[in-house]
Image 1: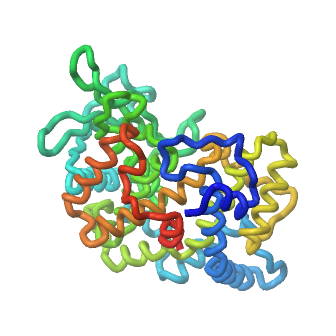
Image 2: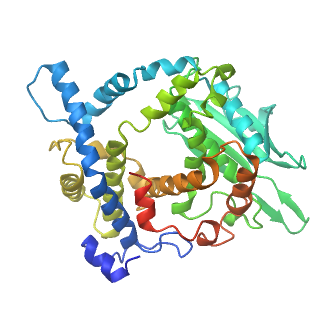
Image 3: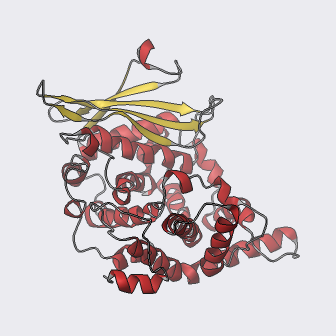
Length: 409
């Protein structure tokens, strides 16, 4: 691993004096973060050019020539068309297989079979629902001891004034009550913005729900003594790993049917859907590299977040890593990127967390995803510990930054 001085030279930033990382993290220095993003963005370039070429061809065919530049706003229209052509399945047709209830049932089956945690829907009392009757409540128990672990509330539907994003909130942390020598059980809320009356889900909506349950599992099985160390109160470069790992069960064709209606998803359809996730992996990850670098540099330089600073920094980053996609002056896609505020120099953790999730999956779950022993080991060594142990002690110590880049390519 490079020294801080070497990394500063590589990244072109002599100082990140305004940016402080916790000592209990997997990545200790902001220069290491920028090195990770720089290397990943560089390695993705050849594949990115291939993917953009496919999208440009689709655009030329539909629009009959003319402007050959592929812009950011073209991506949500043309990407599904190319995916549909390549895997011979319309992504929207997946809705017939997945519903909110089928995904919830799949999450429950997965928790019980792999992690030794039972999930059961229970009655919501009038005084604990903030938008009755839409809120649902689930109790969690240890399968072996039947000991209660905690509760999760689901607030899944959009309504006026509600944030449109999906989030996991810890309403009450797990902790040891030293006066009574008992444990305080955690209360967690999962918030989504699904459409009321439409219970069918796209794969990405299903992934969102499964992802948030990965955070919820982290919270409810926590065994730390102090609430500020429980569950998801870990370092930012660790917090996304369990949720991203759980999503891999949804996308793996061997386990995807767990989440479908009556487990009716044909294996050949599951394999096609699984392949679709990687159709534009370089495009998706390069966009996250761009966002991560913008987030890191704006928070790391100590400069004000004025319009000129953000636009000039974004243009410079996009010219370096994302120049296959046309940058159009006067457009402001970054104004929809709310993680600039909520993550504050930590948006890179989605890529870093995905790398570690991939490594854990390859080492422990890929051979037999539903093996109980692997899930229980992960629960004991990572999920139950929270932030009560060093981040390094919870993960394999032979993983380098270069390893984390390789598994994302």
